[in-house]
Amino acid sequence: MKHIITISIIILTSCVGLKNVSNELAGKWECYHKELEDGTTKSTDLFSGEEFEYSCDGLIIELKSDFTGSESIGGITFEYKKNDSILNLGNRNYVIEKLTKTELVIRDYDSDGTNLSNFRQKFKKIE
Image 1 (tube, rainbow, N blue to C red):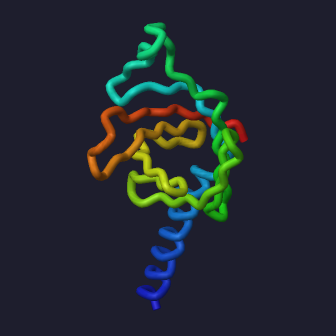
Image 2 (cartoon, helix red, strand yellow):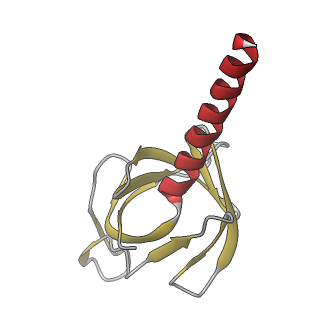
Image 3 (cartoon, rainbow, N blue to C red):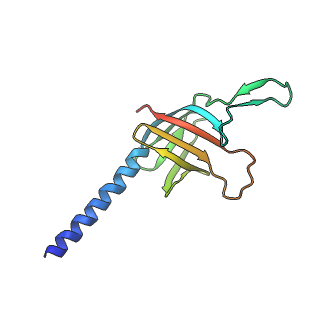
């Protein structure tokens, strides 16, 4: 009988842990910083030669507890999932570098290695 109770407690505890992980992602996330993987925050326009800073352009991502989401730019809706440190938002993949209740840092994930520049975006939870 003790073994059954112990096993039940372990199963319930692990289920609560899984719920907390998904709840950390659920909410509205506002991008406040964008940089290249190497930390570069500025680039030069090829045509005009003018320097510009990488911008989030007001990006807000809303992730719901039913694993659907949307983004403020273009009104795109998608399904999302988290597998270890990989976050899949529709057809885009990111490495989760940091995830707390108030902050999310993701970096473009290119499994093929074909991208010359990968961006890192930092988000703060606004809801």
